[in-house]
Amino acid sequence: MKFDKQKYKVYTWKNWAMLHWILNPALAINELILGQRVPKISLEDKTIDKPRIERSFVPCPHCETLHDSRTWATKNGTASKNWFGLYCRNCGNTIPCLTNWMSFLILALTSPIWYWFRKSLRAKWLAKQPERYENIDIAHVPNPFGEKNWIKAGLSWGAFMFIFMDIGFRSFQGKEITGRSLLVGIVLWTISGLMFGYVMKLLTNRKGRKKTSAV
Ligand SMILES: [Zn+2]
Image 1 (cartoon, rainbow, N blue to C red):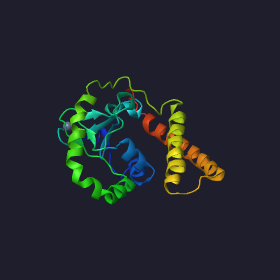
Image 2 (cartoon, rainbow, N blue to C red; image 1 turned 180 degrees about the vertical axis):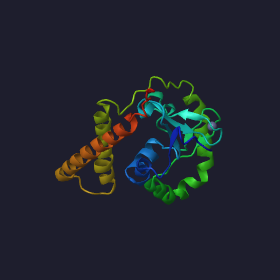
Image 3 (spheres, protein in one colour; image 1 turned 90 degrees about the vertical axis):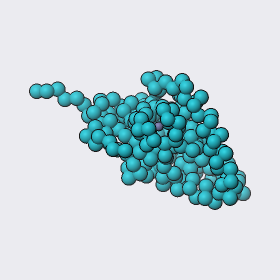
Image 4 (spheres, protein in one colour; image 1 turned 90 degrees about the horizontal axis):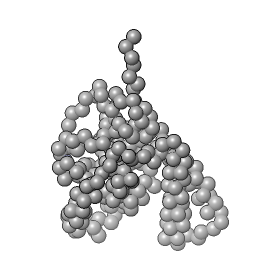
């Protein structure tokens, strides 16, 4: 698929935010458990003077439709459960997504368990998709990281990671949970959460080129 480079900035794995998705091992949880996915290619319209969330598009390589990225939003119930990729509601195919290295490793190690069921699992998942996209509302999707929301969104992510990693994963590993380990976890995930929220705020809010009036 070819894109108008004058109009769109094309994001691939070579962009730092996309690399972050691939490299941060904690995001394997978002990917494998929640089913949140990042498309391999996304576009940012440079010519619209609006927050980035309102001018980001995801191209479908099968039917070449440019989907508004808000098609996959929490408000629409479509931000998660996308284990097999982002569903294209125009042609019914799936849009290829990035894979976090930790997810890849976990999937590779557990492949003897799921490999034999992969086709039926995918078919079952695919059959459920059209229904999920029947009432997609793009106009009223709030930016979860806009205004002061980034603090709340970042801290919720941090809290989720804290419970999952420092309580869940630690007990799974048979490690003792101590006051010290909890304190370190709280500090670490609060800072990481705020950083995550702030980066997302910068990413989703940045405005495009302003229309300059002719002099
Ligand atoms: Zn399509």
